Length: 64
Image 1 (spheres, helix red, strand yellow):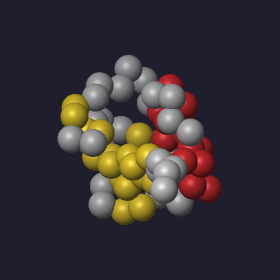
Image 2 (spheres, helix red, strand yellow; image 1 turned 90 degrees about the vertical axis):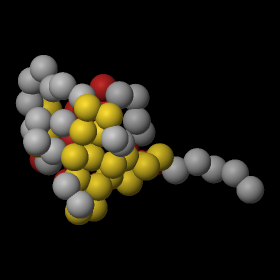
Image 3 (cartoon, helix red, strand yellow; image 1 turned 180 degrees about the vertical axis):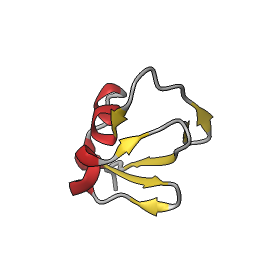
């Protein structure tokens, strides 16, 4: 799987939600594009990831 331009090997099938938690992302603070399509936050838990997937994860940062 490719995440933000880097190759990542999955040891086992994971949902997007599980992957984000494992990598210490806060789901409420990220936007995720999977294979060119935005994944709605409500679908994170049921979106299963595979080695062929390409993810772009963008974390929101506060400031002013």
